[in-house]
Image 1 (cartoon, rainbow, N blue to C red):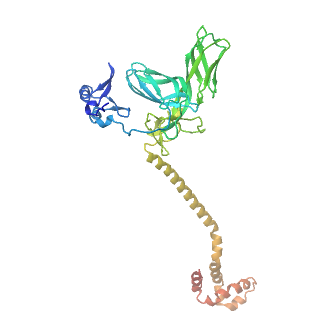
Image 2 (cartoon, one colour; image 1 turned 30 degrees about the horizontal axis):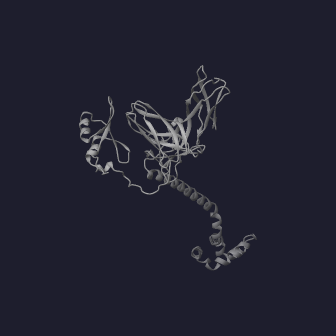
Image 3 (tube, rainbow, N blue to C red; image 1 turned 45 degrees about the vertical axis):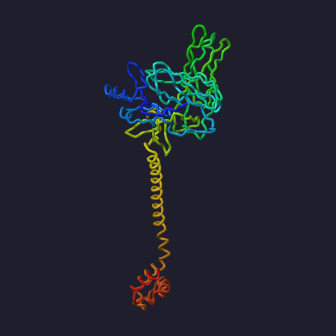
Length: 416
């Protein structure tokens, strides 16, 4: 089979029409014609890596045949098996993408919807692709609003799927039970007497409503718990039959531990390639952000999930901020240490003086005895016995230099 050479004629884009929905396979020439009449049109291009890109007409004109080729070389040989991939198709739209959440038991328990896409006129289907055929049986259902996929419900978790290994891109997330889908309403339940049970509950409480025939119409989550494994939801009943349920989870992407430290975290395989919302301590941050006075914080809103954890625009900025904090602490510690040393020095200075006082206080004694030293006879005539006692030991040392009394101080200074 001959290989078709990529050319400019092969470059096709699309756009969303308010009247006709998603228009695809538009040539560059036709795109320019449409853009002249609709200058603010955002065009849709699927590159060689099957990634959806949204382009202006100038960016469309800058496309080359290289954009139709894969960016990475073809991989040959055996490759390690990993988690399944999700592929959206049908529905008349484009751009929906999501990451699967697989628990340690091999169940596909949730789907993290990364992009809802555009232009869907009906709910697209989702194919679960497992390259190594380890898992099977997962069934996913999409819900759309205004042409955008807003939710992916796991109607059947399947089995045998692999969680992400450490070698593939992934991010942490917490799963909070936010809804329950009734996959089979059953019949003949004793409404108001039968109870719904979640195993394990993890603090979850549920309530339900049913019709006169004992069929379960809907389930409400009064309080949602957090899960890392697929819980079992069942009806405790003595009369009802066949009611089945599946949990729906809200996914909090890349949560930041505040207090207490998060332990109920799962790792999600990032097959889509999430947009990084910033950096925290040098690490990429994919979660929600909110702003206060122009500063970006991790969380949804200041009131409901504020963390006071700053999200920086660049990795370097987040690292430098951390280093600034360390240097500030170091400077503070250094200042405190210097203060302590000064205090110790001021306290110990008398004792240091006492060590050097031997020379310093010695001339002070002669200075007091300098008056009697000039009149030794009179000094000997002192009636106080206390004076002769110190004068005798203090005088011998400086007695020789007593004449140059000023030089005695210099003599001590020279000796130290």
